[in-house]
Amino acid sequence: MRNIMMAAVLASVSGPAALMLAAPAFAQAAQAERYSVSETLVGKMIDDPAAAAILQKHIPTIWANSMFQSAGRELTLKAIQQYEPSLTDEKLAEIQADLDKLAAGG
Image (tube, rainbow, N blue to C red):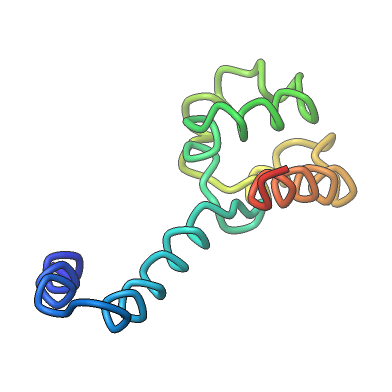
C-alpha cells in the first residue's frame, strides 16, 4: 500500500522534488539488503547466491547438514549457535565481516 501511495505522489510531482521524495525509498531498499548474523533469517541468505557462498565458505559442515537447509531457514545464525558448537562468536564475526563486504559491494 505504501509503495502505491509513493508512486502516486511521485507521479504527481515532477523535477527535483520527485528526486527528494524518492531518495528515502532508495535508501531503505539498499539498507534492506544488508545481512546480519543476529537478525537475518538463514533462509534469506540461502536464497541469495552471494550470501550462500559466504556461508558455504565459513561453515561447510553446518551448510552440508540437511537440518540447516530446511529447519534452519527460519532461524538466525545467532539462534543456531546454541545447537552448533563450531558456530562460535569468532566464527559469527568472520561471517558478519564478509556479509558486510557483500553489502558494501565488495
